[in-house]
Length: 156
Image 1 (cartoon, rainbow, N blue to C red):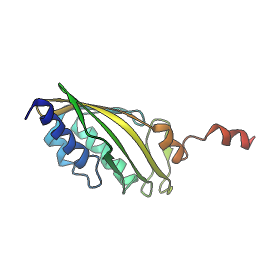
Image 2: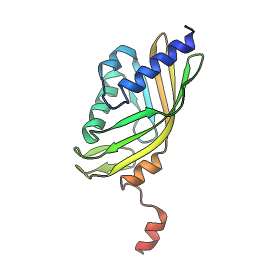
Image 3: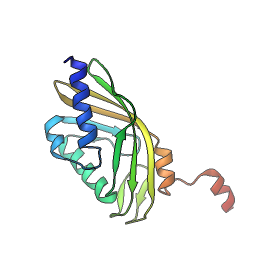
Image 4: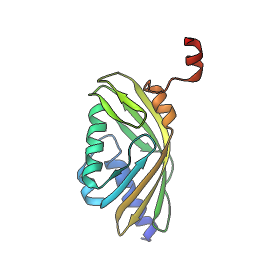
């Protein structure tokens, strides 16, 4: 297989085992570089395997049904793989304070469903960077952390 095909295999496994319905945190030690950077617009950047595992553990505790899945074939060029996805979950767990814009109290029952695009850099079979651009406005609005302008004007 080509380098690009190998990299798509690594990223496909990451999307399934880390971001998919049934998380396998062992995959972090297997295919994430020791100092991997995980960066999305909704959350503080995370660096390193332990920080990334702690992030996902807390995220899944707050959203037990969290699930993300690919919506298009992966595209690879050199060390980079790009994927489109969608997903979300229901906040039925403990309070969650990892969103940059604010925190959720325990078990709000709010559902989020949103989409995004992610660029991952893979070197020698290890993911060194994951940069995602997600539809955070949609997710944060669904969770009640952003109030649409039309709702604000109606409250006046």
